[in-house]
Length: 164
Image (cartoon, rainbow, N blue to C red; front, side):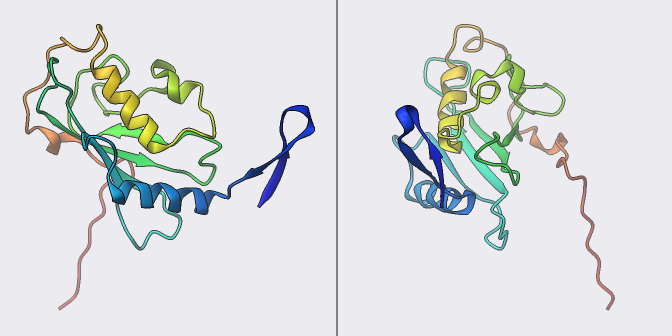
């Protein structure tokens, strides 16, 4: 555990990265709020807990209503001091999302631009859902559903073969 000086010289505990991610994993597995936002690890064998999948069910009274959006969140070694990278796998038309790559642009999404260590992946997903309901996004024409296959993982394609 690290200690940092807080206001007026008080000391606050800085939770190490792996403990923080374990807390987030546990919370994600329990389910959150009304069930319209969820997240979990991609690979249980990923000892660095870097690769996560999030789901947002589109909010009612918007063009997103009833749609299920899949996202990839990548927590680098500096998380939670630095924000994760966030990318929609499901195609979506939102003013903070790059239309080609699906990446949530930090410069256009204040929570990532003004990242604070206390923020979590859950906070990001909830904020993105709120952003879907904002006046500039709630009525934007959306791509047809079922066109996720066009997105390529940022890491590129991995081919596996075996010799028989």
